[in-house]
Image (cartoon, rainbow, N blue to C red):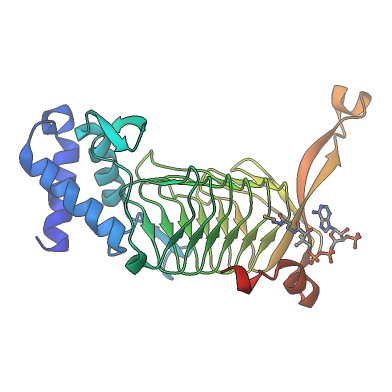
Length: 282
Ligand SMILES: CC(C)(COP(=O)(O)OP(=O)(O)OC[C@H]1O[C@@H](n2cnc3c(N)ncnc32)[C@H](O)[C@@H]1OP(=O)(O)O)[C@@H](O)C(=O)NCCC(=O)NCCS
């Protein structure tokens, strides 16, 4: 099947709704898509300089991922003496030493339909969901989540407990994208299609959603999502968690403040030093 034939098949079976269930050609199309996702040939979103965000969402690929959930029935997934039950179309991925991925033992799981490049290190426990892309040299630390369709760039460090939200529906919604060489600090969360440009640093505890304004002290601007564009964190920005005073109403009367991520600087030598990874551990 060529790529365009696969796309047509996925679109047709997705449009067929529940009647695709039990159709062997729908399952064949889904399994080709899933294999393409795992080999890195297909992805839910791809770099595209012509797009305003620099990324293009491949809606048909997301339709195919959703089709897999529709076609799946609950099945038992063997795992030694443990027992798991999930859609049979999304079992746990298996790796060999030849894949060049370090999957350290201890409660981690990488779902079928996820791409994990050579040189990625997965510290337990962590989870990488279907449709996610994790590029070369990335580190997914303990308790980190890479949600469905999230795109994680080369040499990104997802620190302990970093949560990268999944975006599956609607199919044209952009996933969370963490570009190359970003550090996502411990206990951070990036959700709702937010894009973090290359080299940026999110200090521990930074949370970014579509509704979160980000205050750039250096460039004297406030970054926000719009109706058309997600929240986009600038290249090399260093974002730390801050707060801002509520200036009206009861919030002001009660002396409240709201969480406010702040860009305090752009990456410099000191940041490079603070974020250097222990090469020996890799
Ligand atoms: C952001 C970080 C990398 C520091 O970067 P840096 O370039 O060395 O930052 P600096 O120390 O120059 O600080 C710049 C400003 O931001 C402030 N700042 C730095 N880190 C901050 C944080 N986490 N929260 C709030 N403010 C912070 C500093 O106080 C300084 O402000 P000031 O000049 O008014 O004092 C570091 O704070 C961080 O969060 N590292 C990640 C830790 C982590 O999660 N490790 C993973 C373990 S698995």
